Length: 192
Image (tube, rainbow, N blue to C red; front, side, top):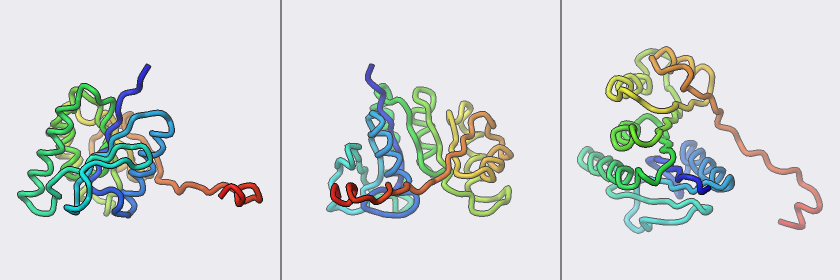
């Protein structure tokens, strides 16, 4: 039985480096190593970057235009939605990093056909008016079915998301960990 494709939607990805980019890269590599076909859908931030590359056997599709202004943002979101709709029949899950416009775009494009998992990177302030919670409220009211699951990095964030109205049984705490290095031995040094 062949596994369905996992699409990771993230606004920024390699060669850009940061916490979200590293987490998305680790997730993509881990899924590929587990035998899942993975596509990372991201923005093409530089014109000289190729529109499609392989990153550790994960396909990376870079869409234009980059979302750096209102009109460009709208066109980028339209490109993300169109890409997802065209391939919906071949997708197993859409995993969206952060609760920006990509979350709403993915839910509109394939939310009833393909499970959409939303990743909350961080809630900036522990108040009901934090930007991530405001966006989550909007997503919950605009999309009746909502996301199949919401993933966050800590119990505090899980509690805030549950208090915002997201069903508790669909919230999963998966901490952003740091991959541990294997113990150094004479053999590992020789292999390196």
